Structures are given as C-alpha cells and as structure tokens.
Image (cartoon, rainbow, N blue to C red; front, side, top):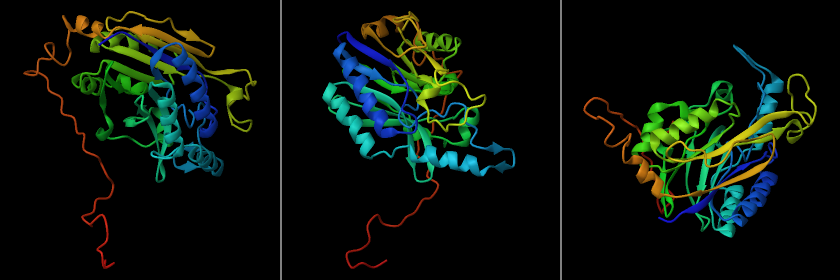
Length: 319
C-alpha cells in the first residue's frame, strides 16, 4: 500500500438542519480533497447535531411538555438511511473521490441513533456503525446499537472502521475491532477535554493503528436562538472547543490538536507503519493469550419483532 493523505474536519453543524449541514460537509470535503486527502473524517453527530446542554425536560419519574417538544425538533432534524441526505453525501464522496466518514443522527421509526456512515470514493454507502452505548443523558434521546453494525471495511489504504466517542473506553469493543484488523481507526467524538488525547494515543499504541479523531468546534450562535442553554450564554460563547487530531501506530502525533477554531488537519499516512508496529505487539494476535482470555461477540441483529410471514403476499392477493 502506498502512502496517502488523510484529513479530519473540525467545524460545527448547522444544528438540527441536515440539509444545510450536508452542504457544509460538501464544502469542507472539497477543501480537504484540494489538499490531497483520500480519507476525510467528520465529527460525531455532525449531520443532525449534537444537543449540547439539553436535558429534554427529563426528571426521575417525569418528563415536561417543553422537553417533548425539544425532542420533536431534534427528531425532525435527524436523517433516514437510506434517504435523500444520505444519498447526497454519497454524491459528495464521489465528486471528490474520497473515503468519507461522518457522524449523523439516524432516524429509524420512532428511535434516534448516533451513527457513523462510511462512503467509498465511488459514492457507495459501504456501511454504518450505530453507537452501542450512549453516554449519560445521551440515553434519553439515542437508542442503543447492537453488534450487527461493527463493520471494518477493506480499502486500498487499509482496513477502515469507526468507534464513537466514549465507546472508545469499552475495552471489549476495542478488542473486537482489533480482531478485525482495523488499521484506519476513526473516532468521531464530542469530547473536547484534555484527557481525550491520552485515550487516542493509547488506542493507537494498543491497536497499532492510525487514529483519526474529529470533534466539533461550536459556538452558541451555531444553535437556534430559542435553544435553551443554562445561563443564556452570549452568541460567541464556545460550547465545544474541538481538539481533533491524527495519531500514528506508535502513538506519535501526526498533527497537533487545534482548539477554538475551525480546521482541516491533514497528515501523510504510511500504511507500512502498521506492520512495523505489530512486529513487537499485536493485541489480537501473538500478544492475545487465547488460552487465558477469550471474547465472544454477538453480531446478530437484535430485532424487537420477528415474524415468519413471507416478504411478499401471494400472487392471488391472499393473506
């Protein structure tokens, strides 16, 4: 495999407005591709928006009418997969000949999921990952993914996969991804804290993989005027400060973290560094000790309703 350029994008959604956000994604994809990027990674919940600071009116034993309406707004700003917004992102990937990875808020019937979509350079949606474990109050508004969306994709640049935000603190999930040979490990996040970097560097070292972490940079003004935030901060107040980065398989910083501004961070990726790193440490291979430790992963879709009815009614129209 030859070296290539990868990019992480740090900017804000147009909160709860998927059409405008997808067009903004397109603008940044063009800029990243102009810098030579073949892989472009956007933040968690980029299309649909991350509801920073919202409590959706929830208290133990009660929910408020205002909170239900806030959820309705959030629900209306989510997208369906497949659907027109997802198709438009495929067009953007194809127009720029890039692997495109982006966080979205996915609507499936009455439930929202924090999801990552993966597109090939021909515009094909090659797969998605739904966040297995929403963190803290995220559980109020996001459903739980199951093991059926833990994909790793073969690409000419390496094996591509995604783990979202605090899923990266789940050792067994990481091990499942390492066992699939992930070498291009995407970590879209909403965590802008200083401690996040230590997690990303640990994962790069542990998995002997490249890590691409993308976080939004948002201000109060990126959200609607009636968005209820405690303290009523000024429009230029920073709600999420970024901190995106790219890290190599030996934990080396390939970009510096950037805070408090929009950014496209790029780095040259040498896929040969993965094999060089695994020479002395392969967590799912020669360092695994399966005689002592073993992980079972259930990748069966967990449907709430199962039926043995035929997919199509009979030709006579009988039931």
